[in-house]
Length: 164
Image (cartoon, rainbow, N blue to C red; front, side, top):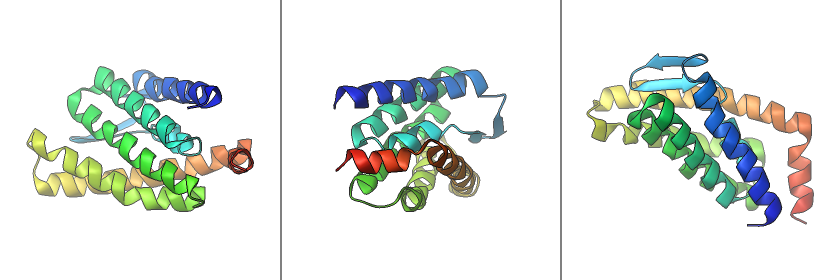
């Protein structure tokens, strides 16, 4: 990783930690085993524009924040952020638009979080309907916010120019 990527990654990881620690509970919807903290996917979604390594780092930072604030089940679900972030970053690197990348990663994210709660004793129905559908809706909301944030600061254009 280049120094600039490490700095961006550190800033986004700090944000990924801060969101659950400061807002987990306050900006959260809880329907166990599902929880949604508004904007918690933003750091990893933005990290997809930087590099696969940064996306993984930010996703793992998110998992740590959720472990500290909300426990191991939510942290295990948040670890899926590293997976969908990596896939998304690779897709962006290959030239897929940010918007299409966010759609591409939605089923990976929702299915991953639904499957990750099964070893914790949750039924397939609860995992699929509550966690899977809930995660898909949460992903869509955060994707819209990410698109707005990225467009407002011109990150897509800057990312495209830096890869030339």
